[in-house]
Length: 134
Image (cartoon, rainbow, N blue to C red; front, top):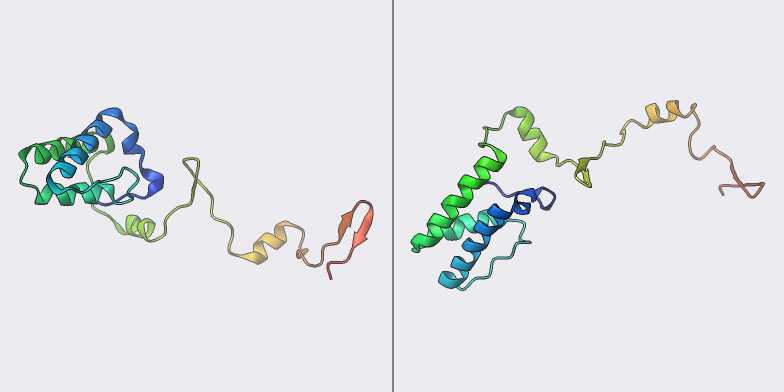
C-alpha cells in the first residue's frame, strides 16, 4: 500500500485499526528490536516491510488483519487514471480537514475584480491622514 501524508492519517483514528497496528508494532519490536512510531509518515510502508521480512506467524497474521480492516475502511485500491496522477503530483492544501481553494494565478483577473486598481496605486488612510507608500 502507498504511504499517506500526515494530513490523511484518519485510518489511525479507528480503534480496531489502531489495535491491529499496535499488535504489529509489538511484534516488530520483539522480533527485530525496532520501535515503529505512530507518527512515522511512512507507517504503512514500514509495517508492510517488516511483515514481509518476518518469520513470525503472529506478525504476518496481524498485518493481514490490518490490511483487511483498511480495505473495509477505505475501499479497494483503484488503478490510477490520468486525473488521479495529476492529483498525486500536486498535493491539495488542507485546512482542518477541508481543501483550501487555490489562489488565482492570473493577477490581471484579480485586479479587474477590484476595479482595475493595483495595490501600489491605492492610497492608505490611517487615523484620518493619507500615507504615502514610499
